[in-house]
Figure 1 (spheres, rainbow, N blue to C red):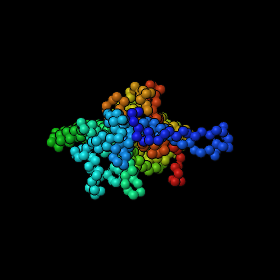
Figure 2 (spheres, rainbow, N blue to C red):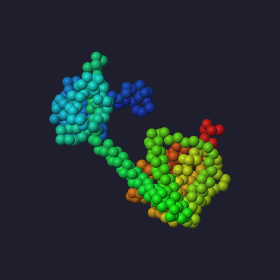
Figure 3 (cartoon, rainbow, N blue to C red):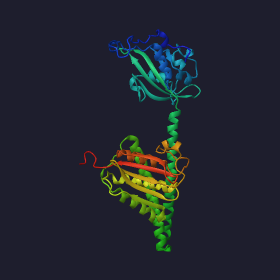
Figure 4 (cartoon, helix red, strand yellow):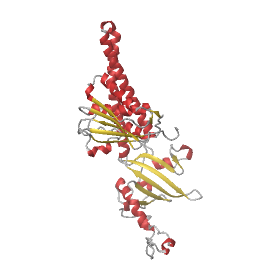
Length: 387
């Protein structure tokens, strides 16, 4: 805790009032509410993860908490009572003295700065140390300043977010480059040497171009869906859906793409309850889970469609290495790869968003063969408002 506390030391501790009567007594209901001591408030401020600096009306620092002392690298006793301009000689990234910026006329203030304070800004201390600073001004009825409260944060969290964004851009660029390079090479060859290729060669090249174009389309779709999930704007258009047929059609496409017939097994209960869902969105879920099992698993991919009380359950098992128990809570996180850098790490994040948009849930466990098991539960029956 800082060596001096401006506000905390300004008043003595107020003891918490406890009722004298035992629990349940009538007096307990009528006893006054316990008062919060100033010392208790100070301790709470010291528990905050962000730095807090309280500035008095005369511009001197009245109080700091432990996090502020740590971020500023100076003892609390040295900060309290010091003019804030001297204790925190902040500059913005344009090299302007921040306190001079705040003193400018209202019409010239930067965006986010008002008479009541300013939103979070990246500011610099002497030596180049960075701080994220938010200010809130408390004014008297006549408009004069009573006190200001500054919240200080390290920019490390923002840097991590920026690093994630940069990683996503690099991953997307890589994922786009490979199929686009293939499309460019094949189309250039076909345009230059059309007459020299046999019909079978042309068909193979065009089939490859189509597959790569679909890969790019899926990636763009995943990116758009990530944005919708993050913003809470993912919409679904429900109608009666035959899930077994949808799964069978996707497995047939994989077999036509060259996978062995015995790589897949599909079992389904009969009869199944009526399922209302968005066919395009559920097709994405099936594609993500089955393709994930093919890409990261081994042996047979077993797909089962069953029913439990009020739910239709889709289970996809593979025979690969599976997902360790300690990693399972992170599987559906954005950018998660599980140690393998292939793909964008967005597919399962999107899958969870799509399933939850239908009111369902998805989980990961171990399959009987030792690989990964992904299980999706979707509510059965006609949804409210569709009767």
